[in-house]
View 1 (cartoon, rainbow, N blue to C red):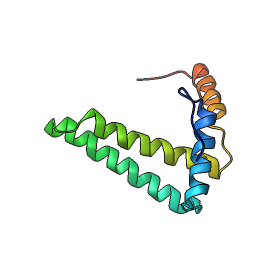
View 2: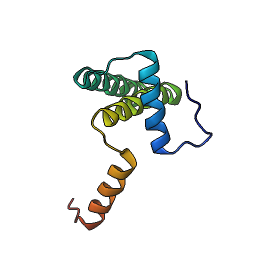
View 3: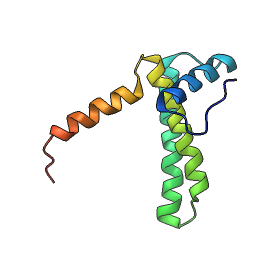
View 4: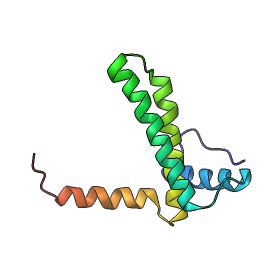
Length: 102
């Protein structure tokens, strides 16, 4: 398993997730990966609901779910050949030119 630096870049995270998926022989079917991603988003929603509605959720439990969502997002990006940093920078540049109405 590859080792991450102390402060990995987004590209390093994506490469790490790809190698981890390959090494552990996790699914390579993008449809299944998307369903797993959605499942993790649901688990995050459940943690946030516990916190907001009942005051019972913790930062640690939400952090774990956020990490799961991030890893599946990186996996999906890898499946479609999307460099997340490039995509984020392009989206931020587009948003800079956009007029927001509230």
